[in-house]
Image (cartoon, rainbow, N blue to C red; front, side, top):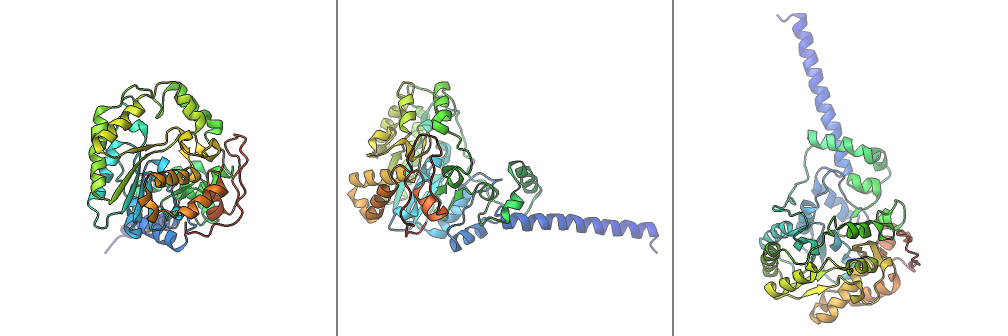
Length: 393
C-alpha cells in the first residue's frame, strides 16, 4: 500500500507533466497561428489569399520557404539572386513566375542552389539570374559553405519558444497578430514580407509607416566612404570565386531553356560615389564571367543604362523597386525578342508609365491600396495610382 507521501509525489509528478505539456501545446498553437511553424500551411494560406504576406521573425533564411513555393507553383520563369532580385512580380509575366530572390547571398549559395536546380524534374523555361558584385570581391568576407538549407520547423521546440520570446523586444507580436492577416512575426509586426509569387513588399517603408534606413542614401554613401559592408574596394576580382560562380552558372544553364544574367543597378547618387574609384573589380568580374560562361552579363550597375530610371524608384541605395525591375525587363526584351512570349510587354509598359518615379507600384496598388510617400526624403513627386491594377500578384 502506497504511503501518503508517495501519492502526493505521484500527483505532483502528473500535475507537473500536464503543465509542461500544456505549456508546449499553447506555444505550438500560438506559433502555428503566427506562421512560424509548418511552412506548408503558410503557403496554403497565401495561395488562398494572395494579399497575405510572410516573413519569419525567427528564421530569416528564405531558402526552404522558396523551395516549397517552387514545388507548389511549378514555375515556368524564375528570378534568382539576393534581396536585390526580389522586385520582379508575377504581374509582369504571361506565364507562371516565382521570385527566388533572397536565396543567394554569395557564391556558396549559388553553388547549392544550382545543384538543387539540376535535380528538378520540371525545369523552368527561363531563369533570370541577378548577380551582386561583392560576390567576386577579394576583400569582401568570404563564405566557404552555404547555410541556406535551414528548415522551418513542423513542431514546437525549446529554441523556437526562446526565439519567439526574444522577438518581443521588437514589439508585441501576439497583440499585433490579432489585427493582421500576415504570417511570420516579422510580417505581423511590420506589414512587410513575401507574397505568394516570392517577391517582397516593403509596405511600411514605402508609405513611411516605419522610418527608412537609408534616408537620402546616407547609409549606403557612408559604406562607400568607409569601404565596408559590401562596399569594400578592390582593383581585381577574386579568381577562385569567379571559377566557382562559372561552374554554378553553367549548371543552371543546363537546367533551363534560357538563362539571362543581370547585374542590377545602384541608385544614381550611389553610383556617382562609386565612380570616384575603388570598384574596378566589378568590370573585371563581369568580363571574366562572360568569357568563362559564354553568356552576356546585362550590366545595369550604372542606372543611366536604364532609360528613364531615377533615384525615386529605389528602396535604398542599392535596391531598385518594382519599376526598376520593369525597366530591366523591357531593356532585356529589346535585346532578346524571343522572350516576348514570357513577358507581358503591354502591361509592363503601362506599369512603367503609371508608376514612373515610384519604387513600389504593385505594393501600393495591389497589397495596400495606399499611395507611396517620399520615404527617402529625396524631394520625389510620387505618382498617385489612377486605378487598381487588374493583375494577379
